[in-house]
Image (cartoon, rainbow, N blue to C red):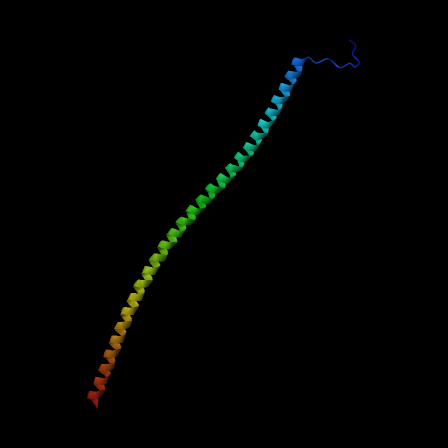
Length: 113
């Protein structure tokens, strides 16, 4: 049997080993690519989680500030209501005193003439 080219003969079991090697190499490449994709996704998830925690903390602070402002507003509203009640009471007293003064002036004029 004469060979016309100088290529070495590859035995059948070597071909099977090479095919298996290439198959495993391709699987390894696919798994490596999946790992890279998962690492990128994990990094993005960490960034999103960090942002979420920062926003939650900011909302908590704002909520506490709003609660404090609400309490201050309620206290000022109550104080304003008390002042309004006092002003109304004093206005009534002034009206009573003015009526009493008007009656007293009329009495003094009537008796003086």
